[in-house]
Image (spheres, rainbow, N blue to C red):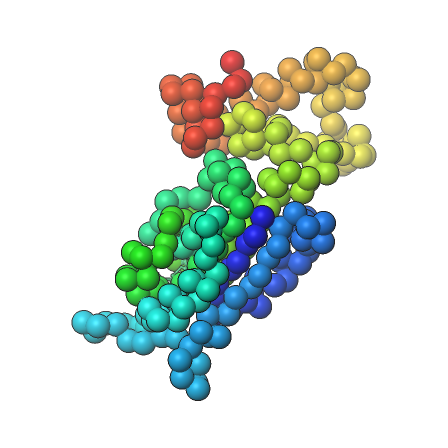
Length: 239
Ligand SMILES: C[S@@+](CC[C@H](N)C(=O)[O-])C[C@H]1O[C@@H](n2cnc3c(N)ncnc32)[C@H](O)[C@@H]1O
């Protein structure tokens, strides 16, 4: 996969993208990430890429010319251009799975009051939001999307780190509780079933726990799952 993040603050993205699974995926050639500084496409010596909004009002808007020139320089036939914005569709695991099938992603980060509407209309294929709150700029949001997508690329996770069994994985339920050594810590004991060595009993216990957890924490997911057979685009598979 080719992945570019267009931002005014590439340094915000650099650290997280170089660590752990995202760093390894790049070293192993699963993803080629380029951080693109929008200021490199500014027209003046001060490298300004924003201006005040027509009609007045607070804040600044990212100008249309640098956005066009920057994004057009990155486009190819496979490019899918995503704008990070609180006005977009809420990002979820099904979207991460869909984006992980793309050959070329361009994530565009806004700043200040956002981007000139003409750039949004002409250049953007899809708008994604991390949730109903407002961040200072889109760089952290782009890192979140990149992380969720990259870990789904074939080979990015080790065989012992499969994404199938985790929350929103093969089944649209939250994951079961996890324990590791020691067996007893301050009178809190690991459930006996997990120490039993009985794989079928462990599988059943974990499945029950997933349903109990989802019912307690995300009754909306469980209800949707029961009613429609789908949650956030995931097919129901856990009957
Ligand atoms: C201060 S915000 C602009 C918010 C905009 N004035 C509005 O009311 O919709 C600046 C930039 O941060 C990013 N951003 C802020 N909140 C976000 C969210 N919830 N999800 C994704 N990106 C977000 C976007 O790229 C946005 O252009």
